[in-house]
Amino acid sequence: MKMVYHGEDRVYGNIPDVSARSEDRKGAAAEAGIKRYRLAVVILGILCVIQAAVIIFLLLSLLSERREFERTKLDVEAGFKNLTEEREDLKRKLNSLAQGGWEYFSGSFYYISSIEKTWKGSRDDCIQKGADLVIINSKIEEDFIRKSQKIVWIGLTDSETEGTWKWVDGTPLNESYWASEEPNGGETENCGNTFHYEKENSLNDSPCSMSHSGICEVKVRP
Ligand code: 2F8
Ligand code: CA
Image (cartoon, rainbow, N blue to C red; front, side, top):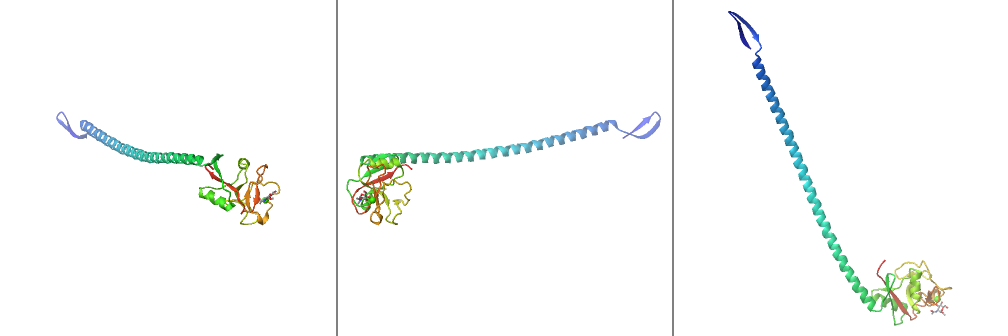
């Protein structure tokens, strides 16, 4: 406020000081501007911090994924190397089987012994070769064995329980290829062979003490 004079007369009063008000307004506006500016700086700062946090998080995720990928890659490479070695090993084994008189048929190698032995003697020979007497799982397998045109011991016996025929792996005889009227030996004939190889169904029971060739089997695929 400032005093105003009119001629000689002094007039006293509180007249608003316009220029001061304008100054005040300017000051207030400047202060508000500074506040807005500070607020903007703070918001920008917060946004920068958030952005930096997001970038760091993404980088860490990326690094962890990359490490995981590297680990998986190493595992796959090691698995591939093992498989390649196993394949080479199998090839060597197959070649040596083929050269040793084994015959391949439908996922298995078969060997017919030239020396005739009891059922147990023939089985022991097969086991000693890393095999066992054959287990017949299908008609085509039975036909393949019949084609040898020999009586051969197979991996079938009811020695444990009379009348309960089992394969050497302990599985029961389900699909049977008994010749007609077989098995007929009761307690005197407890081991299986291909006595009737000329017939469509060739299996027979014979005394286990008889001497025959045996047919061994090694499965090379399930
Ligand atoms: O005719 C089938 C019959 O043939 C032979 O006996 C005569 C067999 N014997 C031996 O293998 C010792 C039976 O087992 C067979 O059932
Ligand atoms: Ca018989």
